[in-house]
Length: 147
Image (cartoon, rainbow, N blue to C red; front, side, top):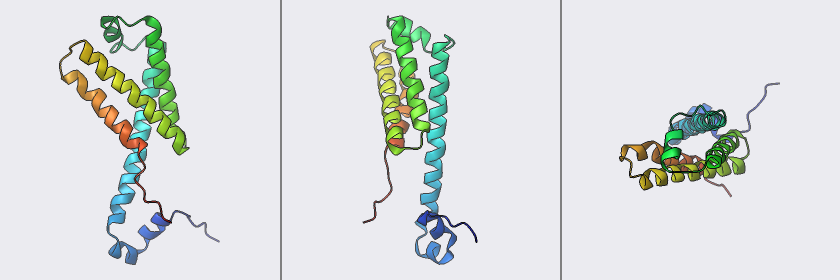
């Protein structure tokens, strides 16, 4: 007896007749896989960044925190939020992924605000803005709910 997948979209993709009727299913599967890869990349990135803050090896954000005159404990709070947000993104529950992306989005809003207050050049806003947009996009669920 062969094991059958319960995911209806994957079964539809294997059926050539369905693909001829619904060619958009290729796009749907590719976007689902791209979303999973994106979630994993962002999650691992923020776990590593949070750990680097704890062992004082984050040489990119330490000077920014010093210039903004943030207290040292805030550096570790941001590291904790990054670490927890990254871990929550990698969890399987949809609610934890959403909470993780919200945490990461808040950190990126704080980074953009800090660069704005410090009157940094506009190119310092690009990476936090992109990561903020990706965090928002990973928190959204684009699947149609069938009744």
